[in-house]
Amino acid sequence: MNASLSTLKKDGQTLLWHGLALIPLVKAHGSPLRLTHLPSIGQRIHQARSWFKAAMQQNDHGGKYHYTYCLKASSLRCIVDEVLMHDCHLEASGSVDMAMIQQLIDQQQLPTDRMIMCNGYKTHDYLHAMMAMHQSGQVKVVPILDSQSEFHRLASGTQQNKEAMTLGLRIATMHDQTSRHGIAPDQVQSFVSDEVIPATWAKLVMVHAFMEGGMDGSEAYLRTLKGVIDCYVALKPICPDLNLLNLGGSLPIQDDLAPGRNQSGIIRGIVDLLTTTCREQSVDVPDLVTEFGSYTVSESGAYLFQVLDEKTQAKGPAWYQIDSSIITTLPDTWAKKKVFPCEAINHLDGERQMAQIVGLTCDKDDYYPEQNLPLLPVGEALYVGMFHTGAYQEGLSGYGGMKHCMIPAAKHLVIDGHSQVRVYAQPQPPEQMLQLLEGDSGHAEP
Image (tube, rainbow, N blue to C red):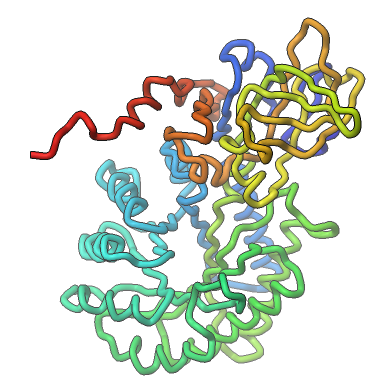
């Protein structure tokens, strides 16, 4: 076995994932098989809160910590419901997210004390949804301004509200051509002084930092974060309602950590930098907000595949043909060259060889880099698993939609807190795919 992660454990010849035996699942439900393990979500949330609590106590930070879940990481209702069971706030990225949040409110699944952080470009529909939700007073909506024009467009629709709208301000932290988000630091103070403070309909409560690489704890990350903290320090004296620092970006999961780093140490470094900077400037230390998507759900996801065949090469590793597609199930593997933990789930003590996993499509990119896997046994099935796949993959590949080379979506199982397994979605039938291709052709325009 070549995986050394806390979520995986060897049990004789087979693999356990979160303590769950995997072979019985593929025997009962077939493959390919997608798994979502809900209890691990709450475990991640609890762990992050304990790390922040310890770091804040160590630095005499007397404020609060607010855990926020990013809906874009996975919007599956079973996951969102699990997140809300652990008293989390939500981060939205568009109008459909807001429709989901409104549905949760209507179903009394979202308490009124929850914050809704609204990131992303504010389209007309998105802005309208924010303003309507704010006017309802059902939750605390916090539009996070990405540009000054968003402030102007909000102003046109919110001036008649009885209660001021709470706003966040995203500080630009990167300078390459694709890092388009946020307001430049040298424009922040004049914008707030000249436009935000005089606006009676709004109050600035949050400064938002976001680094594309997430909270990796590197010196470069801390230098960039220091610049955002400096913006907070400059704004706090003129914005008495400003009391939140949103750290943005996700905390690395276990297998993404750089050598020599750990998650609790990263958090300690952040809290230490914040409290030290604020005290040096005699400014109140803000409450902390995080927006954790990947960290929350990555370890809750897995895919199981059967190796259908082996194809040898004159040179190089063998090809292991699986019964699905790497491209359509895990698009980050080819789009971003992301590495997911990979391991056989049976025949773990068998002789091994280096093999590349290949998918069913005719695309040359439909493969996964070589792994040390058991030899394909004669007359017996070999299954492999891809783990920590719970974030972003269904959104990128299109949940329930058409896939490259018409590869159907896998059967999807959900495991709850009592280790009960339920079918969340059956294997995608050809009839559904064909119906999608027909579109509305059967309904003529009047």
